Amino acid sequence: MRSLRVFESVSVDGYFVDEGGDMGWAHAGAPDPEFDAWVAKNAGSGGALLFGRKTYQEMAGFWPTPMAAAQMPEVARGMNGAKKYLVSRTLAPTWSNTELLPGPLVEVVRALKAEAGPPLVILGSGSVAAQLGDAGLVDEYQLVIVPVVLGAGRTVFGRRQPLQLTEHRVFRESGKVVLTYVVPR
Amino acid sequence: MRSLRVFESVSVDGYFVDEGGDMGWAHAGAPDPEFDAWVAKNAGSGGALLFGRKTYQEMAGFWPTPMAAAQMPEVARGMNGAKKYLVSRTLAPTWSNTELLPGPLVEVVRALKAEAGPPLVILGSGSVAAQLGDAGLVDEYQLVIVPVVLGAGRTVFGRRQPLQLTEHRVFRESGKVVLTYVVPR
Image (cartoon, rainbow over all chains, first blue to last red; front, side, top):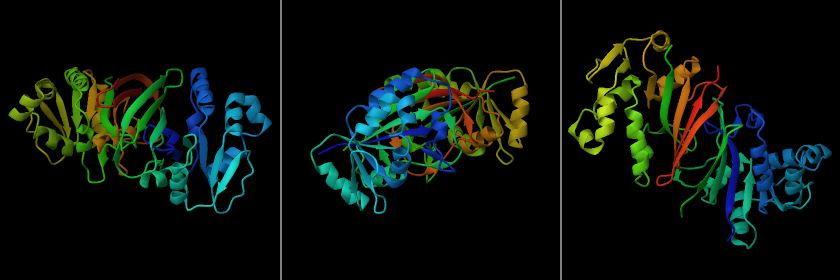
């Protein structure tokens, strides 16, 4: 059985995108080389990535480009090299190492989790994460708490459930706080 | 000029009360003497408390009782002894050391902040905190992140604004994380 981790930047008021669907606020604030190094290490940690259509399109349009290779070489290498699953009925994969899963989402992910293989990681696909949380399929949330109040937005969390804090890390330059929680079984 | 701090327990998805208005989830989970000691110390730190009607009624019905004195003697002593402001047009104060401020809220708090005196602290009065946040009158948020997803509820935060992380503390027994942010001016 593979585990499923949701990795997400969230605002202090708990949103992963603002009212207009934007995530740019997550990169605002002071430069923080220590945080960037942590992200780069995290991106190379060997999990398989699981995407919904929208986030896949955005990421597939950035990470394979020379701009990504110049700006964030380590993360780009990790993202391009990783095994990727795209859950979509309409989109054909264009990014390296992508396997298309035509859905329905919950059934597909339940089957994927029953296989042997590296941990599955969801990055930024908030509605996918919320649906899988509701279905009880998320094992771990790794949250980057960004020091901003958005006032309105969308949540990445599903139904009510207790969590268990397992790790934390504070990045002083940017004020970002990474909190890792497991879902108790 | 006095500062205004909002002290609040929030869920991982950013709510201070659940869909039914309940805050009981904030006290669930493993016993944590270290956290209790921190709360007791915090309650005795000499700020003046600012309440809306609803939270005042709840707290005035608990902290002066023998049950509170038996269960949490230090916190009860701090709460009962503290200077308290009640912003309400309808409720008469019944709890020790309370000064009634008939409102309107924003004008009253702006005037109070212009006076000399100890810092003002809002505990749990979420709609009061949100209104004052919107008016730009909150200087600091001290948040206890409780390890639970609520799925739905109400937010204590006002409009969009960047924050600055100043302090953090992690309580391992309960998994509660205290994050303190100031609002940059």
